Length: 572
Image (cartoon, rainbow, N blue to C red; front, side):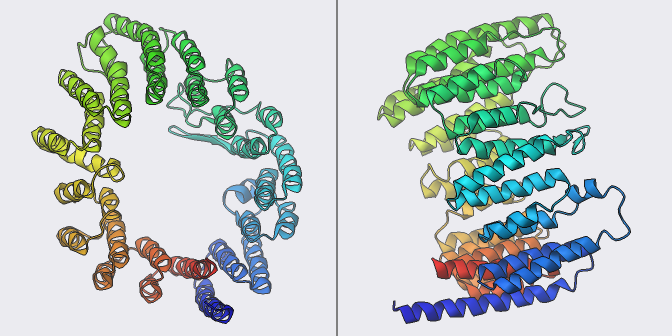
């Protein structure tokens, strides 16, 4: 394509984008709440900035800030607290400016934001933008500044504890900044900066953290570096000062890191520490701690097996036998406690269900990947028979995993035969789950049949995963016919229809796509569909969908997204 043609197409895309933004801007006046006007103005301003209209964007950013400020007139009580929770306009402007690459402007604004925690978060946003653009020196400096500000915030001022949830926004900010510093190689600074971080617990669940803040920084460290030295550093740092549940979760990640580094022996060493963790039998729910231990040991054994370290996995199996026996003995002495396992299960059955069978399924998968198909099928058949001896949700989960492996190995007839033998309600639930799991591992005809046989009224939205794989308009038409027989007002049905309409356009059947779109009424579903159509280059169809959105703010957001996506496609 000639440079002239490229420039011409770019000009057309730009003009079209500006027209969409002007339509979005006209909707701002229809909103009555100043903060909503401000939030929408920020989005529109970003769109103008993305299209190169700098002065227009700056004018709208200023207007958004003025609208947010005006909303506080006569409402000064608790302003700092409410400014953090209710009015995030300034932080949104900082984020938008940073995304546009206007780092100096974003930094100037960030330093004016109050309260201090919001300032720290805004500065961190700018730091991330600078680092992404290649300016790691200034980005690091600003990240360190954000860390110091966040550390100085009172930990009680921006936190809450409820019956079923909790949060501490200071700790969230510290962890986020620490993650950035870890990426920059400032590991010791990150660990020191988060030394005060504690997990929080909901009032109704004092034994398991509702927000595992303490372990978050360690996961960042493991995921970003994953060297033997780093893994040993994390293992040493988590020997104390962290809850048992978080501790074992981090240790599993450490063990998996050792396996990835080719050191199964070190992974077994971690498993030994997990197996030897003391459990207070007088605590409220000791069996939950045992189950956590065993589940984590199982995860390590599965990871070892998947990499072919079968002898090491057997060592972990021997270690797991100890807490399994302790758990079994405790339940024999305390039958009044409800177990997650079937009643009257013996010790051997307990070991099989909570450890051996999951690991053996992983071993079957490993053998299959190595080309030993018959050995894999033999293992699956053996353990399917063993599962038939038990009942309960854990058994059903393992049965599901085995069926997935049969489909993956091409044993579809065997899998369908098993499905047909199940109780109808159990089969329907299992088939819905399989739609998710088999998208990438089974032949298309398996997904087709699962979609065709799954009752829509049970779980409409699950079927979107099946729709995404369909390339034949005829199959999509059959699904549309089935959907039309159901109530279409619910959100799940509306989102499913949006997926279906987009897929019709994708496979070259626009008339059917328009028919489905015409039946949609949910504004959010229409917005999602319009975004999909923009990405496909279906401009006229996207505009038609947006014009049917009845909520001004959602319609405006759809126009802004359309302007940005159109420009992105042109840039690509």
